[in-house]
Image (cartoon, rainbow, N blue to C red; front, side):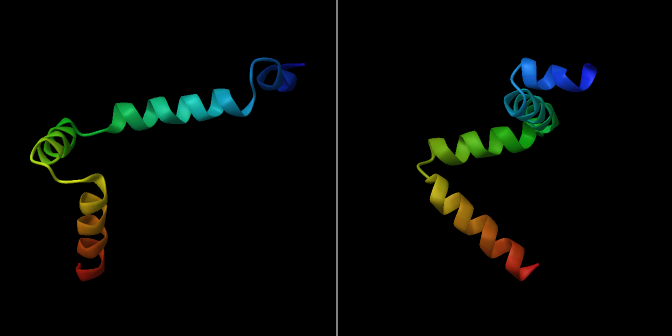
Amino acid sequence: MIAKLPHLFGGMRMRTLAMEVRLIKGLDNEWVQLMKEAREAGISKDEIREFLAASKVTE
């Protein structure tokens, strides 16, 4: 009976929401602030992604 409960209450969506909540709770406030400042300085999301991707390769 218990195994059927996730299906009754939304199944995958419930698990996805739970995962999102864990991700949000795990965000570093300093990182969030840095991203906000970058966006306010006019740096696009794509530029940030490109920078992070390039940084990964060189490390």
